[in-house]
Image 1 (cartoon, rainbow, N blue to C red):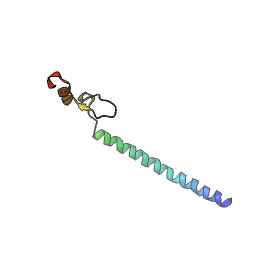
Image 2 (cartoon, rainbow, N blue to C red):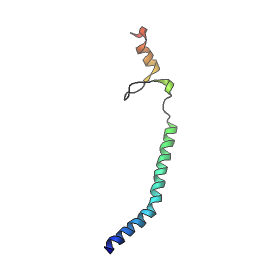
Image 3 (cartoon, rainbow, N blue to C red):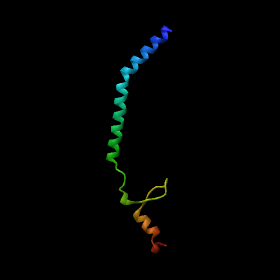
Image 4 (tube, rainbow, N blue to C red):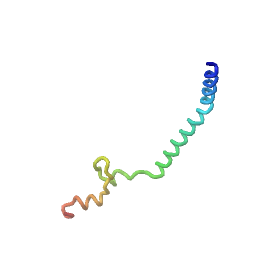
Amino acid sequence: METFLNYLAVLVVFTLVTLPSFIGHARERRIDRQLRQAENPRPRRSETIRSAPGRRPVRRSVAADVLSPAGR
C-alpha cells in the first residue's frame, strides 16, 4: 500500500508540474487557429446563395444563369 501511495504522490507532483505547460500549448494552438482563420476569411454572404445543408454554396453568377427564364 505504501508503494502505491508513493507512485500516486509522484504522479500528482508530475501532473502539477506539467499542467501549466499543456494549458499554454493548448492556448497557443487556439491562437494559431484564430490567426489562420483571420488570414483566410470565408466568402462574404452576399457572394453566395443559401443552399441546402451539406451542399456547397453556389455563386450568384452561376445561379442567376441557371435560374433565369432566359437560360432555359
